[in-house]
Image (cartoon, rainbow, N blue to C red):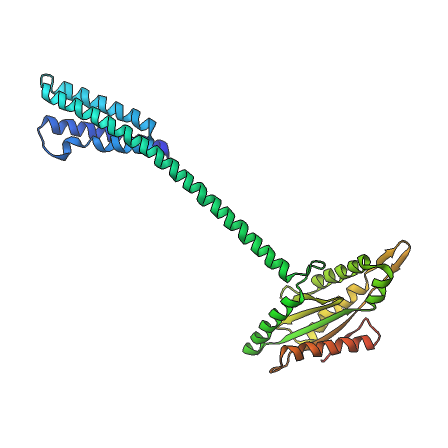
Length: 296
């Protein structure tokens, strides 16, 4: 219901209350019914403040006119009605003032609540951003090693509990030290950024990718058998090998990765799981780099 509707109903109810009050007074009906017109006046004064006072004044005048016409020769009733009217207007003024102060305090309190909510939201966003930074590698945008250990341990526990498959990829950029020493860390960082983007592009939405450290990266793949993991690994290897880098004008180089793959074996711990993937990764390097080697 809109504010205009409320004003209409308040005015209509007020006039009706005045008429009922005068009728009760004229019929000599005792009790609270004679003072019914108090209620809408007080409500209007509280609800609408200045407009409420105008409505209250209008109702008081209507009431006095009705009393005057119903009791033209009754001085006592007229005097009592006049005193009652002045008293009621005084009360209406007080209520209107109190209403204004209450509304001011309520609005101030609401602003404080809104500011507090905004501050809380800003803090939550800051905490979320801080948490994200604490688990993310700044250069590649992948998760970092610490987060890798936490998530992998939880995934191993889930894998054993539900007897599901779990595969792990460990990647190392071939001959990265020579490239970094020759062209500098800025060019080396571009290679790291590119392999990070390639990994993210090639893995599935259910997979988790991490920068393991230096030029090493890892991906664990929940509910994935070794042959399925090898398909993803081959895609990463091929796409990264197709990339071209121009560390200096007029010179173009390709970089490759060696990838080791293994699947989780029930009962083994996380360390053995990672070490086995690491061994297969070094086996891929022994085979001449740009290889995928697995325990399949």
